[in-house]
Length: 479
Image 1 (tube, rainbow, N blue to C red):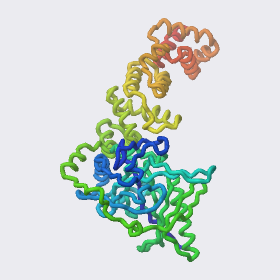
Image 2: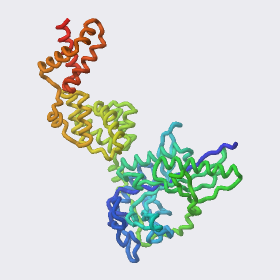
Image 3: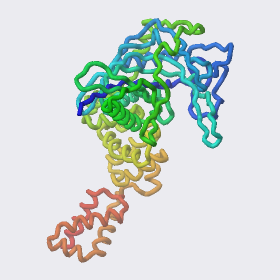
Image 4: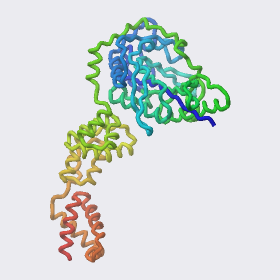
């Protein structure tokens, strides 16, 4: 059987994190009542005129600079003409001839090593509305709240050869955009969407196969399944001696299959022409330099700094920098407690555990870093046991309570009263004469039994060291 190579390029749409739309002052907030975040501009009313949102340009510049792109300092908008119900103007304002960014690259890392994925261009454009299919009424409704929401479309070169590379590329873009504050990249809300252009060819050949474009991909898992499904479909066609048709296909993740939507359009089908209502955008050197200076530390830089400045292992820095929100929480905690390694241990174990248990994304975690820092310091000063500190942190994580107050109210502070500790030791030894005899007879493992009993009796209010010391002292008296 012939061997085939998969050739993949992506068109990634990223909603920009502006409060208002690209050409009007309507809200971009997700989840509003249908058709309430609208005005004559974003619903395409005759006579309405677009005005460019300056922040859209700034966010696009940030994304382009981070992705090593060249900047078109003279760029302009074009009209892309097509006729769908969710497109109220019957055209989309986009950029074809002079996109804001072009010829960039990002580096990904997979099991095969590092690889650069080239970016053909990034351009600014407006989003379309959303069609809602009502199966009960057997009709389709249009919500124009999303119409006019600002996007950048990131078009890669066909450099990817596997699902693993595609997912690594998407994760890299998502992380980069979140760190930059360009977008929240929530796939479930549609603020990051990917269309997959895929073809197959015989291994060793240079000529490209016929590509298809797959839409309706709203999760990385769905993207992975769609790639594998389309690859198999195209290979099966070629093996049967049939041709692959260039077309746009819709992926149905529930059925794990795709179906043709329409023949694949070329640029000429959209009859692009310069938008007459929008003047060209002139981007000065000083504007670009100001954007560069304002850009935050990206993940790669942060990982390197954590290893050098905090002395953390590579594995820890990988997890701690996975999202900007988590890394900011960690840094504030480390600064407040003055011990980055201790803070990292708490994040690696307790914070990540609770996030996993409660199915939370880093952006949904809102405890005060100072409270965790206080708890770390209390453990260090032996004011609270590590066991109780973990229980207290669950309350801090869920309710953002002050751990110092909570520990005092719940009586969880480590007991400093030696007489109270001695009374507890005597009580446990008196209640367990059999195990005591075994220990005195040389069965040393029984000592752990007494430590456990005491810790339970004292409800973790004594340190294990203090408990052991008090036990040894009292047992020696009874020899």
